[in-house]
Image (cartoon, rainbow, N blue to C red; front, side, top):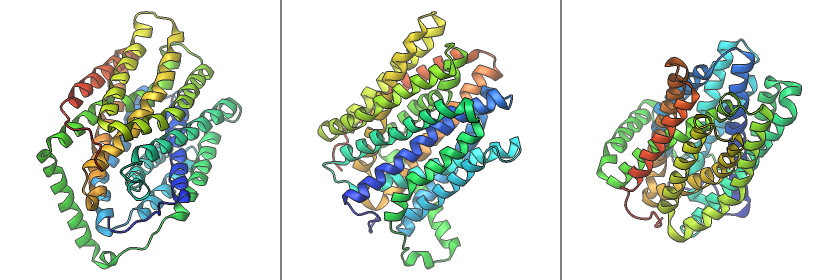
Length: 410
């Protein structure tokens, strides 16, 4: 983008980092913990209910990601989109459980879609506050500090889930999301350039044309294409595993809800220092090797998670899964964004992150759907579902070996 919407001051960096805490709180607390337990324990739903609801949310994100990313490039602004989507996500989360069950499910879909879409513009702002020499470190700080949002989510769940109930937690987490978003919202710039004066029809037509061109031109860059394919497969595995970890731990590994929350807390705490550490390594050797290493780690973790009930291993091994998953997830997030920035033209960052996001959301459609379909619709159970995820991660690792370069140049 031609204009910068955040200055590269410590205040802007801190605001950008704090915002990540709110997003992590949402995904760890609302999506990963409270919503699945609310659906299955209170509303009488099952894995399929959770999986298909998340699939519907991801379908919305899949179609809107490239359009909104390209539109932000056309208007030369990210902050107005980030502000709008953040507010919609907060209000929707705040309202879950206030209305009847079907409407609450719809509000959850809106909240998930909004928070995911806001990630397009949040990720793009990294180019404003970082340089080629510290992009990995700044991104790593964002991931590491962002994990404090996950810690807050687990602490809230630990103290209030049984005492106050699920609806109370939805509302409390929504309020914290808003508070953690305020610094970035206040420090950002929102003035639109003259392109906003064009008729909306022309802007949308241009957006769809550029989006179509971006998708069609993806095949011209083989490394970019292989990266997107790999991202689809490893996020298929990781997104589904993240969404259903709590239910799998309780229903199949036979842990208590308190034990599952403690394991989740351990994983999140591990991710805090590992985010910064992985970021430093990315700056030194480039993001691609780190990405491959962490996808390989996910292959191991998913295989171990599947082996615990299938081979009747000690359920205490679930602590190993939780501990290592925090590091593996941090390494994944820290390495992805610098790789995209290393190959995206400066005036098409939003477009690239739109396609990047679209590949991830396509995976987030397939992941929850496959879990619900395998475990409930086919009746094969949760163990079969997680074996499928391990195979997806393995395929992603081999696909990443086809991606060339290091991704170090930005």
